[in-house]
Image (cartoon, rainbow, N blue to C red):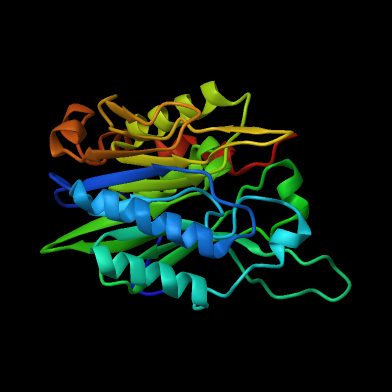
Length: 294
């Protein structure tokens, strides 16, 4: 994947300024199986984000095909260079806003096994170019039977004029594992984007994870959750942009909404500065973190 940095080394890097970068989260409900409708929705929200000065917009998990574990949706998976991602790139280029969005990525078929695509998030630059992707590593309950897990974390450089924003990505349940955002922060992420499809009754957990992952890693976190009421589940929203000083721009609950927040160096400094917590770790005492749970 172009220009990515592996997230797995031990020493934190020293990113530059994020001051003034505008980040949007689109709290929307995609239509299951209707890629054309979801691309149209992406166009409307990206246009609105551009009008509000956003540099990047984050859409929810599995946004292009809609979040569903049913085989009729899973078979709609496409390769990263397929028509849907190219169309999303055209939207990014039209409005000059970088896009992070979830989609179902085609995975290799295994003989005699049910088809399981990757649950992926792609990053498209302001010129529409593909910059990188992330495949969800921590699958939740029935997702183990629907998706093929990823096994790599990466930080994607995102150009904004003369400034490069280092963008880390994780997906929904990944943020519940502190190790994932920590690896991204160690690799120099300044903003962590989290496409999500989180449902009731997990509002408190999502809110806590959004705030804590920002504070404990001295980074901003932008989470875009699905909002949708279905017969058997409610995706509650609760999207927002969390700052490392505890600030939060929230989209609220149970309604479609676009929220735009400005990243501030002052919020990073107030939390202890870039790598504040990372440099204070006593890694020599952490060997037990690599042991399996017994």
